[in-house]
Image (cartoon, rainbow, N blue to C red; front, side, top):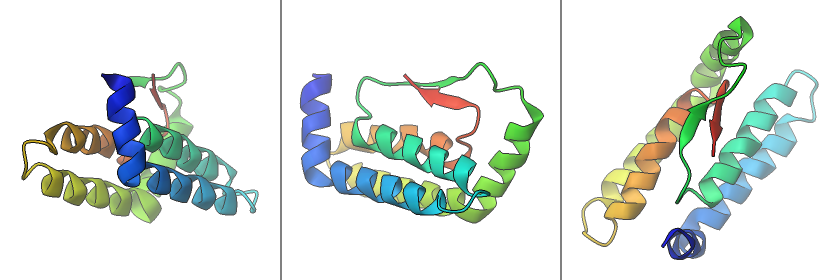
Length: 122
């Protein structure tokens, strides 16, 4: 079921969204300061491409104080726009019964979009 959900997700926008995150991450990584943010954008892109069958977990370095600083910067600069986008798409998809599983995946990606440092999708 996860394979079928991911396949439908990819066909109807997941691939383009994921590639957008990955391309944005690569462009952000052109500067040395942007490398940590670019890697998180690429992680979010991979998570956006195949969200079914995965869950968000804390990574081993989640207690690192630098993660808190990076999460605050990320949320101010990029994260809130991405989270609002997932929220709006999730609400739109939740209108129909067929869209409920896809809305659930959008809602699952909101915490990762807001605070990606110190979290992984497994």
